[in-house]
Image 1 (cartoon, rainbow, N blue to C red):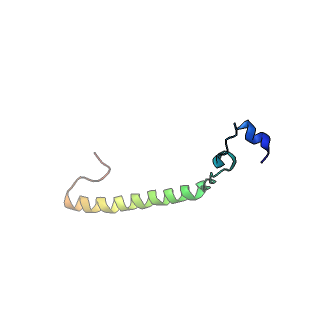
Image 2 (image 1 turned 180 degrees about the vertical axis):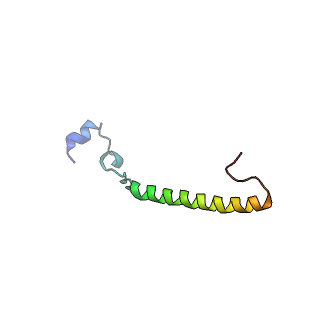
Image 3 (image 1 turned 45 degrees about the vertical axis):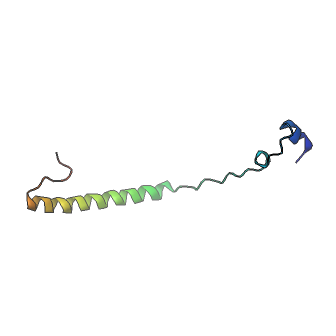
Length: 66
């Protein structure tokens, strides 16, 4: 590290001023996330439909209806 850089920083020798401790952010696969969310939505719809069949047999209000 050049002395000029230390001088520019007011002779501040704090390590974090000269060494980055930042970690790279994890890359997110948006297509994989979208696929997972779509699958979950399908599973929720299927489970709701099955649950509503039981509710209907019992004469109770169905989920997702006012």
